[in-house]
Image (spheres, rainbow, N blue to C red):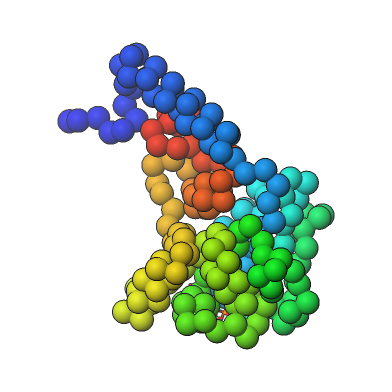
Length: 220
Ligand SMILES: Cc1cc2nc3c(=O)[nH]c(=O)nc-3n(C[C@H](O)[C@H](O)[C@H](O)COP(=O)(O)O)c2cc1C
């Protein structure tokens, strides 16, 4: 039977992989963003573990990190994070209703916004320009200012309406990064599996990390 991807490769091939990985890490380091202002939004979809683990990796000493939670985000999060969301000192939490925040205006837009997890409702409202609360307005600002907006939409199955909204958002410049974990990292716990999603989010934020093994790095 043919071996799987983790069968021991011949020496030259492993050497090539290691050199390749070294160069990849170097390139990521060179391109890694220094100080950024990042807004992390949480909505009422399943997946609070991803948000917690992303926030655990965003160093408030290195980046300015802000968090905003939709009212349904609070409800679903209570189910999934019984101990509540843990925020590092230095992370700023915002109310969903106050527009008295820098990211509500294009004159003070942040560098990046991540909505993780993102409901179909929030996705639809952003796609159609609803801007009636702080979270939606922030996303609207990111799009109109051509800033990085990463949506992590979670729903299954998808309706045509969901897919059409995704299409519209892609056309408007958003990054759609569904929180779909990958299973080739050798993850042994739910946390490690969740990190495979967090790793992709950090990649798109251009933040250097080694949260989860990259293909074809060898597992421990
Ligand atoms: C336990 C639970 C899990 C949910 N999971 C999802 C989900 O994965 N995706 C989704 O689009 N909506 C989900 N919903 C529905 C949203 O929470 C609901 O549509 C809400 O109005 C979304 O509001 P928001 O987008 O402002 O957070 C869930 C609701 C509950 C109660």
